[in-house]
Amino acid sequence: MRIAVLFTASLLVAGCSGATGGQARQTQLTPITPSRTATSSAVPSSSASSTATSSVAAPAAGAPIADAIRWIEAAPPIDAAQYHIALRGGVTAALGDDVAFTTPGGTTCMTDAKHGSPGLACLVELTSPPPRPPDVYGQWKGGWVDFDGLTVQVGSAHGDPGRFAAGQGRELPYDSSLSFGNYRCRTDASALVCVNYAQQSAVRLAADGVDAFACARQVTPPAGIGVQYVC
Image (cartoon, rainbow, N blue to C red; front, side):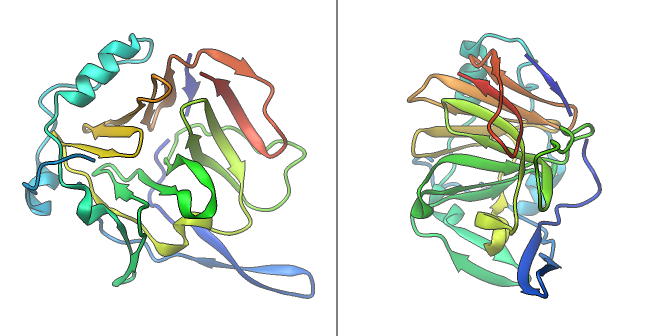
């Protein structure tokens, strides 16, 4: 299945900083220039990673999940220790056991287990994000993707930046893979692919679409969600 979706120009996450007379004041997080779970401690430089391209393209939409896992695992693992922080305007925030990373293409992802969320959330600049449902109030984030291995949700309402209030993670370079919890992720010049081993499901995030491997059944989404698929 495929959800046709564009990269806009930046990764700004709007926050709700307070209320006056019932109206929330919106602030914007300062965009940063990012800079990669597994066991390797070799860390390519961010300057090299920004100019390199993946030698093998990510699997296309509709490929078997085995192909997606094989592609992810073909990239050597990178040390996850440097991805337990988020960066915002020159300020570093420690995330504890949570992980944050950003792709060279601008997709930013973060876990939030400390607040009870078991899944991975990513902000993707989609070409055609799901439209705001009629029952949604507040700020609509059409490029917010939640993937917990059991479901893929694209588009959701957020009154504040949530987990992304701390900023963005460092860059995950091409031709390396990052493992954390039940997940492992790899990116190329156009797409990020992440697998959830516990559920044997995977998701491909790109400007032109969100593709789920082994998550083919579309269901009626709960209130506040644009599109939902069940794995």
